[in-house]
Figure 1 (tube, helix red, strand yellow):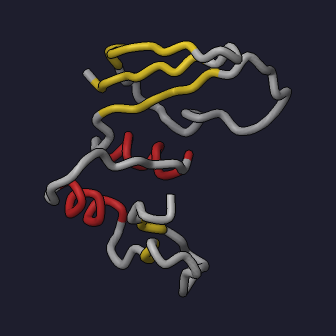
Figure 2: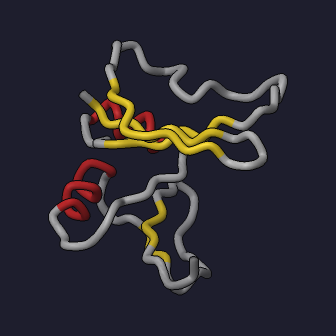
Figure 3: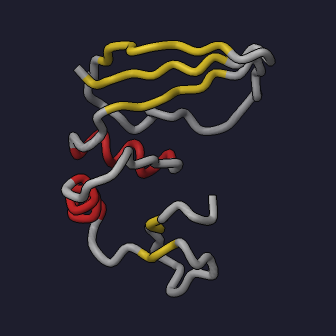
Length: 108
């Protein structure tokens, strides 16, 4: 994890303690388009709010949704702010021994 480059989007942080992380200096759309223009692998996003924004900007190509066999009883909905209908095509599914299921989807 330490070796992987990371870009942090924050309204409150002005410096980062993690050597492999940099603070975003451009807005989300500019930053992601610049990343997509670079050679390399996938861009991984681990933030609910960034995923929603990327969907709204049309910059999300594929996503993985891991479902755990637990009812948390609360929390925020992943797509609660989305007003548009978005269609996905399932690429593959992987089941783990603990019962979690990972679905990989591509936007249609």
